[in-house]
Image (cartoon, rainbow, N blue to C red; front, side, top):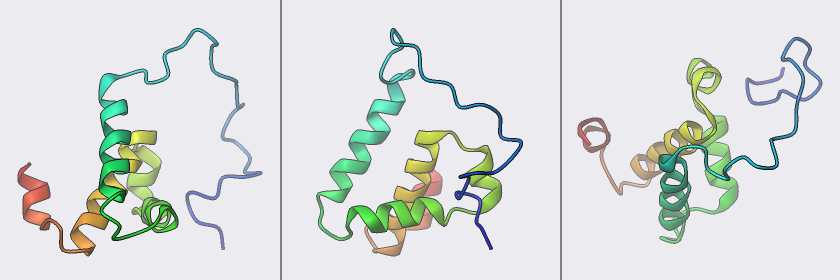
Length: 95
C-alpha cells in the first residue's frame, strides 16, 4: 500500500516542470523562516533528519495533500516539538 507522500509513478498528477531560472529561491519570505526554524530546532539534537522527514510523511493525508512544501515542514516540526515535550499542543494552537 502506498501512502500519500509516495507519488513516484502515479498517474494524473500532471507534468513536472523545472522552475524558472529567474525565480526566487523562496517565493515567499515565510518559506525561508520555516526552513530556518526547522534547521534550528534540529540543532537541539533531539531528533535526526530522518525523524524530521518521517514526521512530515506521517501528516494526515488530507493535510499532506493540501499543504504546500513548507507548510509540510512546519506541520512536521510542530508534531516533533510536541512529541519531544518541547512545547505543548496548546502552545502551538495559541501561537
